[in-house]
Length: 288
Image 1 (cartoon, one colour):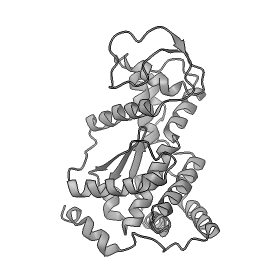
Image 2 (image 1 turned 90 degrees about the vertical axis):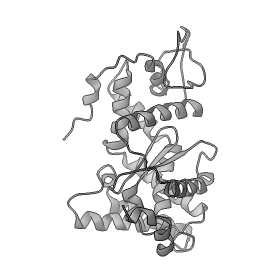
Image 3 (image 1 turned 30 degrees about the horizontal axis):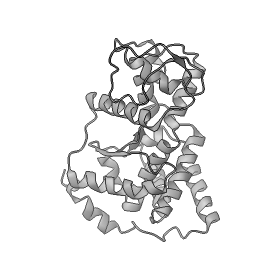
Image 4 (image 1 turned 120 degrees about the vertical axis):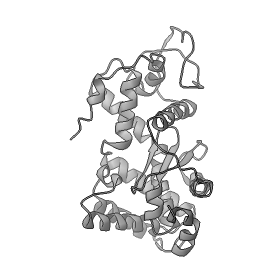
């Protein structure tokens, strides 16, 4: 098993990023920070940042977006292959835009991208970046299931789960200095390797379900997708990546069913259940 803290010993010569990262890790920790502008504007800081010491209680949306842009570029530089089919990408973006108004942060800028990867997976990074694998697009039954996964990832962003986990790890390890290489590896581990907290996943499920219903999709899209994961889990020794970093799927499914019953929703009342229409929308993927 990989040591999730192997990145602690890594370092980088890109000292400019030190200030940017401390904006994130200073949340609630009382870390003294050099005074910087309200938005970073790029992945680098030119010249002196000033010497005034301040304490940041929260990170602004604009700072979070700039951090997300840097992380996104880092992933692309390291080999994350963004899918180039315009119709597929616009389809995913349209679903995301339909969900956003029903999220906790409807005015936050989001970026939806498709990753060329045949594994069943989706993930989110800070700053509004949501990624959907081509394998997920092929693996879901209909648009409601796809929308459910996207809603779940949006909920992680609206709840700032990555920032929360980042802050907790830094606090637990009593870090006094964080460099660029360390923080990038940490955020990558949070996104791809470290199991998410159970409460964070349940919160993303609940908020995602509410988003899904608010946007007019059938709530069975979310329960249907989780049921599909359970079936895959039982039949295969090679679990999808999202199962390796999430709590037990059966318990998540039961919790969502309880919410749907409590709210009195008809799980099949809503859009996105036409499998044939969905397959038509993603037909270009079938020929690859």
